[in-house]
Image (cartoon, rainbow, N blue to C red; front, side):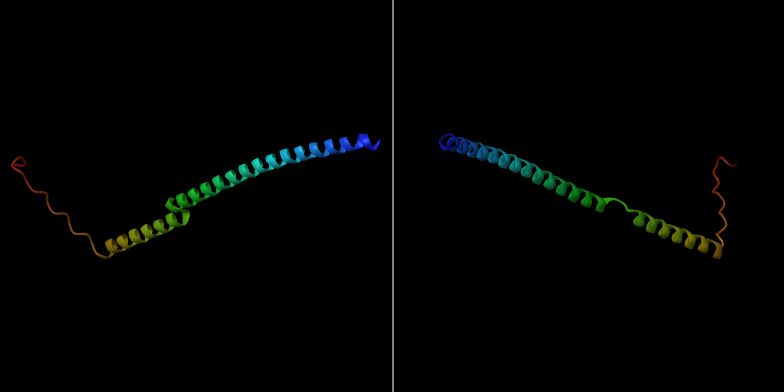
Amino acid sequence: QASYSAPLILLSQYRQSDRDRVTLEQDRARDERSIADTEFLAREIAALRMGMGEVATRDWIRSEFQDLIREVEREGAKGRAAPSPAPSPAPRDERDR
């Protein structure tokens, strides 16, 4: 019986090493895809962050509006404090005669 089992054990070990090799190759391929995906996502995130630097944020827009409101209020206060000059008469033409 030992004479039969020895070749079967060797054959089983050979097949197991083949399965291990295939599994290792599949793991490597999956790892390479995972690394490529991770690098792609890192580049995309970096591009988005750079793009966000160029996009007007809500806080920036709010501060710009507040500055404009202050400027309009100042101009309005100046207009109320100093009366506007009377409009000058329109120049007359030869045609007006």
